[in-house]
Length: 56
Picture 1 (cartoon, rainbow, N blue to C red):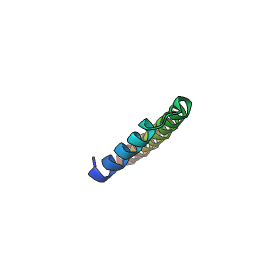
Picture 2: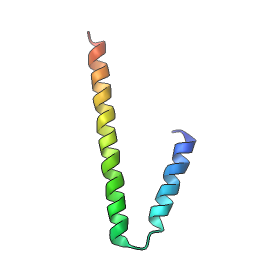
Picture 3: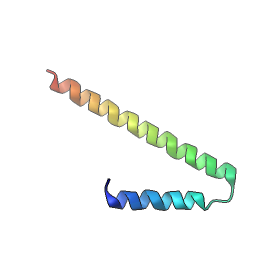
Picture 4: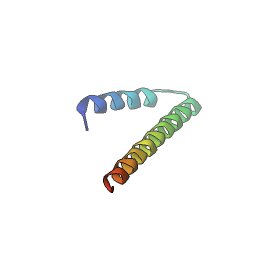
């Protein structure tokens, strides 16, 4: 993994961990999880399309 991204993600996680409002913290983490899942789905779809195009 690119170290710059790791630093940014770690900083974000530290910021979320420092939040004192538990409900807000859960909302933020749920949002991060939803965005990551959507991005992963997009990448898997792009890979599938790329793989399909190589089959021809």
